[in-house]
Length: 242
Ligand code: PEP
Image (cartoon, rainbow, N blue to C red; front, top):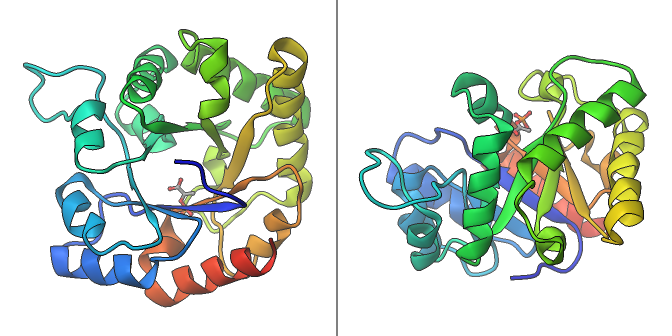
């Protein structure tokens, strides 16, 4: 499921509270280039409201069987999920998921025909070379078992953790060199062209900054994706700049 142009990934996290609210939010954000990732209980309800946007999930598990509370990528694929956020910083830091575990999820998602949206990002504000080194080592560990032919089937979400949910978005000047570092690394070492998006306090006031960069393939939006008006405004700005 290939989206043309820049994308907006809507990560609703553990929101909203009810199916009815989720349906209303889905209808409001149902536009081309949008990937909506609702909480698992609302996946089917949201899917039934989408005509243009594409269904995503916020996670998935690599196996089926005696794993209480988990759900597999095959199960997600069977209800229409096309993309899965994997390795979000909240999973890494609140639920202790490491890159080894995340690599199993990335592999299983690809096997199930789901495109992983693999999140990486440095925890604290550090220098540009340190940030590039940190995210590249996270990234390589998170795709260690992935065949080179599958690398371009992964969307990488560069999300500096310090910018997530803080209102302190990273500036284009901070984001672009890190994204370029990843792009160049994959070009030089694997001859692959990677699709990289940015996430971290994206708002209608700052989204245009990222969209003008030829190196940034889109944005991952948390907080702003929960407000119908704000989400719509951001999507419209993205569509008007591509
Ligand atoms: C996120 O959830 O990954 C995220 C970027 O959230 P926010 O937009 O709220 O910073």
